Length: 373
Image (cartoon, rainbow, N blue to C red; front, side, top):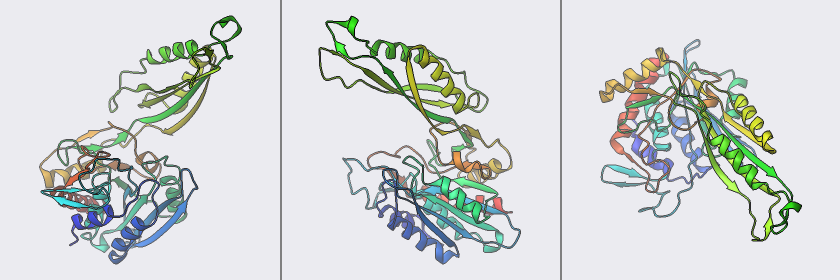
């Protein structure tokens, strides 16, 4: 039996700020190879969003058997200042294990590795879909991984992403879907001039303010059966005018919309473009992902039963929170997210309860065995 705490320590000790490559993938490969996994590694992309390393590891079961995949990421967000101990040197203090990635999500990956060690090889095919680009732009991570999986004709039947979904206690929440995400950059152009001669200039700032006010007043929807209401937020406003006596020639803003199943990224972009045109504004948009849901059924029941067996909890099935790489993986097979408590993710002194790592290992083992049966 493998100890998930020891495995998590080894992964945390490999600094892997996004985009991640190298040592942390060496570390994971060294854990999986003795368990019978064939490792496929490749690097994709160039600066500034790359290079990114990715891994697909597979342990083939009997011919015709089901295929269950664990998915996750080895990259982490920057540590920041103010840590009590080194962010890239795992440290046990009391009942907690500290280090960047302890929760998001090296701890979950450690529990996955320890879990598959307890799954008999004859149970079926197991795989790991691991990227170094989830915390960044996600351009060179899971998307090219999916291309490799399809080339290998190794699409899984079911996939579990180990994001930290639990809120108050391990096992209290499972994510069966996510809202979509789109970011838009809005520019209003005018004509520069002297503030004392406004009739000789064209100030774009009032138009941009009016445009943003119209967007801010929108009520996109009231939510739906499985999703909370969509929300539009202004996330940046910039003019960059350092002179006090100059009317600027351009004003810029950025908005972000998280949207439910009553919208698509394209329809929201078209809506904002129409409003922007009325204010002589231009829009550039990037759709990060569409909304999706894996409706409650056999897969979510497998997870809920495993959670209850180990924790006594009936997990809430939710679509709340931000986005994840599940937005890409859902194109391959049904996907659900379940992992550790998320209270300290991305924070200074990120930490996981060591007892939770052991419980999560047992839950993951139960899920894998049931999903393969």
